[in-house]
Image 1 (cartoon, rainbow, N blue to C red):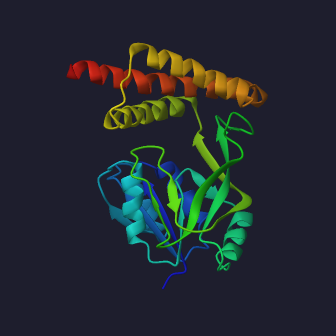
Image 2 (cartoon, one colour; image 1 turned 180 degrees about the horizontal axis):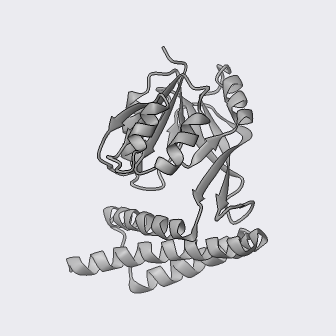
Image 3 (cartoon, rainbow, N blue to C red; image 1 turned 30 degrees about the vertical axis):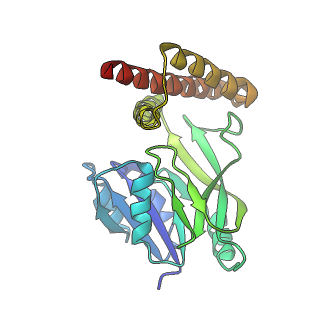
Length: 249
């Protein structure tokens, strides 16, 4: 039986999936759940030795739970296509899964925005629970911003998981549109009442929190760009929810 399984969900990640899987050479099993990519993602992943399963995208939480159901290892590492495991983190993971007293590990994620590592802006240190004993954890069913819920003891690994979600400003705009749409659906599913002013007030608060309270100004020009992008994403999430509510009335 594999000792460590890695699970990845992907769609049109040809630019990322190869390097991602290369950084996971230490894993015993690699599973990629692909949402019918049109750019060769599945073929690249298969060429790197991953097991590729096709499935229509059903939201981040449900999709990752499906990927988890395919894993056979004693331990599972969930990673995104735009993330990389450094050799130092790989060695730390190998040591960590020998500890019988721990059921899950939160990894310290270091993200970059338009080529700059973001050490502030609420992006670092960004501990994310990604490594866990199979059978001890699952993902929430949220359409976006899903998280792992672990039934057991959780510890931390300090070696950085590298994350490059936004290489260009165009990537930030595309990401903002996708995530705000999913976020609006979540607001609707929760039955939350949204007004026209909700988007404006939440957007302004998001900018202030990112740029001032979370010291985004220390991340230079990119810190300002990120604060604006976060604010816009929040604004459009509420505005999309408001427009959807208005159409139903």
